Image (tube, rainbow, N blue to C red):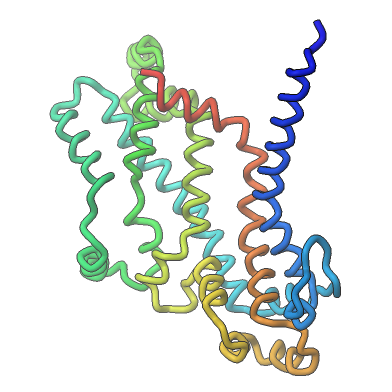
Length: 297
């Protein structure tokens, strides 16, 4: 059956709107990439849109030769890996216990958990708590305070409650303990929700710049996103040049092709592309993991 003229017109309008929305969403990222490959002084003239006008790799050379930025990149990678692994593990264990109807005080625990989703202690009390726990200016301040996400726990708990009780009962007959049931039965069946929540957690750890800027003063512990924020907030070229290695400063003084804007765009690409590369491998789990974990009861 052929589509009518009205249906074809509607399809054209829908595709046109989707294409426009895709362009609007993608263009800022593309423009940032173009600027990162363009001569810095030439970028100041404006008019850089879809292609570099004066192609150069100097911006990326400065980024990769600056030991501070490379160190920040490694800190971000370590934080993302450790933070995601520990967060998903702790949240899954907590959710498994909360999924058991025989747990005494389960409703009270749940209410207390939900309260933390709407109210916090505030920045100053939290800062004082972090300092009293000797977490201030340490790597673990980026991992431990946010170790368990209540939202992720609720998704995990709902998913666990949907697993047939017969599987656990048969495992217990075979002599499995609670830990054995969790790690041998429940978690292997929870692949989609684990993959989805792992990606969400990893993106949070990778993109978070605010926490280190508040609780870390040691420049060697700052992740790449916090250093990128410092670059973006820098309006004077000399401030950025003071953060570069002496070798990079000498080359910069000779070529004068790198500006704060071009350097920040190159740093942004280095900080963004790694986490974007993870999405294609886990995209298929998004709908299945979140919907099953959120809606199935």
